[in-house]
View 1 (cartoon, rainbow, N blue to C red):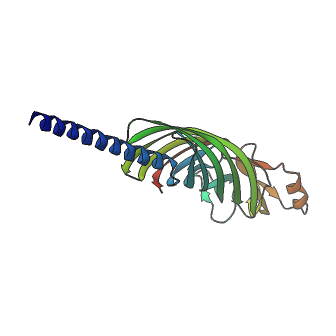
View 2 (cartoon, rainbow, N blue to C red; view 1 turned 30 degrees about the horizontal axis):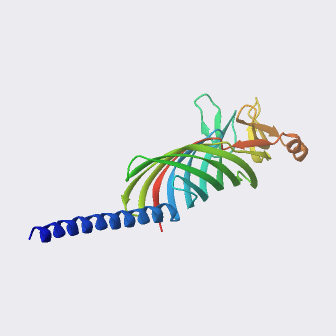
View 3 (tube, rainbow, N blue to C red; view 1 turned 180 degrees about the vertical axis):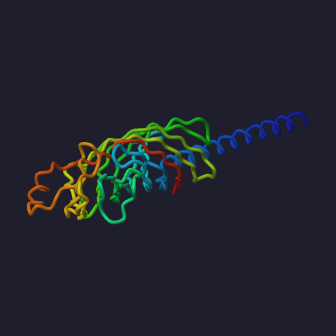
Length: 255
């Protein structure tokens, strides 16, 4: 009986050890499969740039794991912003607003759209099974369109870097947040002339054009003297800087 009892205990221990090894092997395989899986991220948020101010910022990305802690992401995004430049005169274009001193404040709307194509490296440090912090950096190729009167398109390269964090809410679903800073500058936009009018000191109407002076950031009036095309060609081009920070949050799905 004692021998039979010993055999039963040994058999139980053996089964327990084999069961533990099997569970560990399955867990290890799941972990390996987890970090080796491709994931897709969908994010949205807010960006602020030097010249365009606040913009909507959307991003979609595919991440390819290179190791347990390092991933490479290929992304595409969408940036959208609008603004208004101002000019002051004795009078001005129709639709201006009186400034309280007999003058008129003139507003000119413009719209900016950007499409960043990005390559980003993600270095993740785990804070347990369900959370992690992320150091990220990469480079982007940016396609842009700027509409004032005319539509102008430019392209530029620029680096970006930042920090992020993730939190697992399901086996293959993470909530992700990130803060980034980008360095991007589009060069060589030409100045548009807005047809309008002003009044001279005697109150006589003067037809001409309003244009944005990038030196002081305001619109100014130029009398139509028959040489407006030549005058506009002599105005220096201006740049649009997207350098600034972005804050985004979203979901990442593993496959």
